[in-house]
Length: 126
Image (tube, rainbow, N blue to C red; front, side, top):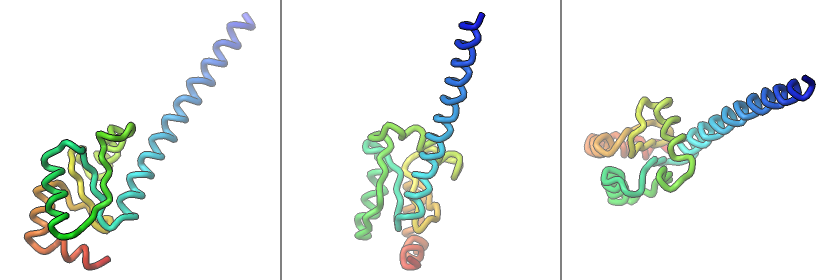
């Protein structure tokens, strides 16, 4: 009987501890994403093989801009980062570009921001 109670209590502690670790890990991923977005002039969430990401990187390179790039497919927490992006902006697709903390969007959105002059305006305000 006593052994059964110890096992049950140990299991309950393990379950509680495991849930707490998962929440802390989730919070640390969220903190990482927020830090990337607000600590970099241009933050770029990407996948290394994505043709839309490559197109957006080319557009920025043509403007002589060097974004801070997070390659989600090369990170163990890439899927979690995409989930955080979904919570923040309602999208989990890549690329996702932020300029001075403002969400620009994907490749087509970046192209439109360049064409309209919005991107240059945001970049000059830093």
